[in-house]
Image (tube, rainbow, N blue to C red; front, side, top):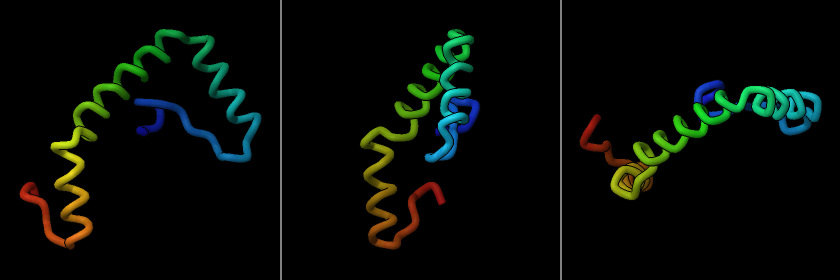
Length: 68
């Protein structure tokens, strides 16, 4: 999740912050839609099996990926 691009963050124990972020999205549906769209694009681009499995393999085996 990229703050202010694909979603909004708040501290885990910050009820006022969570409320504020929810209200921000409720009061601005186009912002919510844009963030949702950008989030979906990011997931489809960066978290496909074809991308995630080589990264995980390289992390577990300590080998660099081909892109490095």
